[in-house]
Every structure is written in structure tokens, then in C-alpha cells.
Image 1: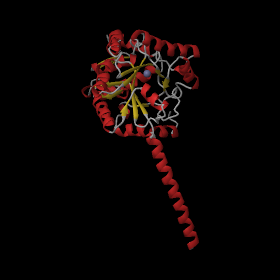
Image 2: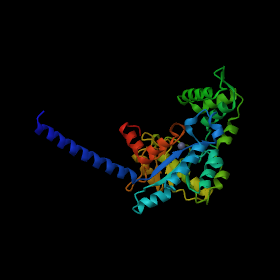
Image 3: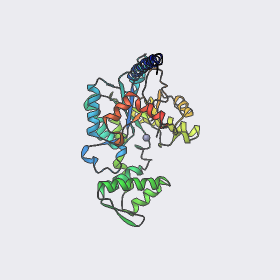
Image 4: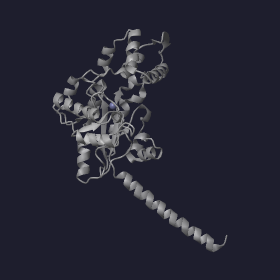
Length: 341
Ligand SMILES: [Zn+2]
């Protein structure tokens, strides 16, 4: 290769290097100037972790404790959704603001999660499905988990099954819940309880957050309460009227029962197939100040408040590496590239 060609290639490489450097530094700057919402459902003390049949639905409280401490140490400010939106409205780009939201309304929210956030002196947002404290949702999944966690064997389809080890509990939870999900989960759960002499109502009561527990949060500036529908449906599958009833009904019930503002909403399931443009408009029409999804991503100024991204952390994503990917926005970019939103 002659020298003019060589020098030409060197020049091209130099330009490429500069462009890459510029893109990398502007991308890093862009990623830094953002806020983030992390969401999860349940948390248990470390001693109960091993026996959980459905770890993907839980966080280990020790991990959550370390995570909160580390975020505070690294100068992240943990805020309510109200504060996060307020900062964006005032022109703040949301940098290093983070919100934790806990969905549905299980007993461990009252027993473990809120007390942990209070100990750290930082707020947490609860998106409550009002059918849980109202006792109108059977919570069959949670009931199945309890039965498998507490017993060494169960009877299923006329056969006795060994569920004595943690590995067996996890295996059978996945198998049974997948089979039942394909049909009528509630009916199958009721029949399973009858066969195994389990009290479905008592199991539900052991898992559900009650109105009395929720009352202990009202007026606490560290607990922000938002709505998460009445019966936890996939909102995109409902008619507009039925969807609006779920959105307005849950907010109204929370406001009247607890005397709280209830300005924010989170869509059940929350991925792009579960809520879309029509549903974001309905949330606006229902009078909310924001609505959140579970599409991964970060929040920066200009963010549409009615499709807030949230990043799910649970047993499958329980590591600082995952959390760092969420905070940087890389997980959201990755999900969009892979079309997993
Ligand atoms: Zn939910």
C-alpha cells in the first residue's frame, strides 16, 4: 500500500476516533442527567428467602436495605413521584432523583417494607389495588405460594407430590401456576385448597394489606399512596368505560377511605401490550397527575408524565449490576433494542 493511501486511512481513523469520543461523552452526559423509578412487589427477611417458592416476585430485605444505603451514600436523592415530577416541571432534568414504588398491597408492605424506608428516613410510593384490602381479590398465587412454602407434600390431581425441599417448592410452583394460568386460576386454586384442607379465605387474609394497616400510613410524608386499579386487570383489554371505572374507582376508594390525595396511578403488568396511548389518555381523564408503566427506562425533562418508565427489581434482578444498568438507562436502551418493552 502506498503512502498516500496509508495517510488517507490514518485520517479516516482519526475522524472516526473523534466522532466515537464525542458520541461516547455526549451519551454519558445524556445518561447522567436522568432520574429513575424502581419498582417491586414484595420483600421478605433473609431467613425466609431460601424457602420461597416464587423468588421472582420478591426482594430479599437485606439486599433492599443495602441498596437504599448505597444509593444514599452515592448521593442519589430518594423522592416521591410527586417530588420527581415537580423537579422536572421546574426545569430540573431529574438527575440523581430516584423513586421506589411497591405495587399491589401485600402484608409485607406494612410489616417490612415501609418500616425499612422509614428507618432510612426516605419515602416510598405504594400503588394499591383496592380489591386487596376490600377482600374482593382471592390472591390465589399468594395462597399457592403459602401452601407450598409451609408443607412437605401436597395432593395434586389425585397424586401426592413431594414439596419438602426448596428446589421442589420452586419447581412445583412454576409448574402448577403455569398450568392453572392457562385456564381458570381461581377455580383451580379453590379446588386445590379443598383437596388439601387449606382455608383459602384465611390464606388470603394472611397475605393481604388491610385498610387498618393502610391507615397507619396516611399522613406520613414518607409514604405516598397511588392507585393500581380495583381488580388488577390488563387495562388494554378492557372497554374504555370499564377501564375508566378501574382507574377512577380505585383512586376514589383510596381517597375516601384514607383521606389521601392519590394523584398517581400505575398500570397493572405495565408493559406495552398491557397499556397504550388510549389508556394513558384515560389516566389523564381520570384526573391523575401521572401514570406509570413497567417499560424500562430513565426519566428526564420532557418526559410524558402519563407513561412513566419503571424498572422492575425482583429476585431475578437482585444485584447492584442490574440496578446500575437501570440507573444508567442502559437497561432501557437494551430492552428497546431487543424489543422487550
Ligand atoms: Zn400489580
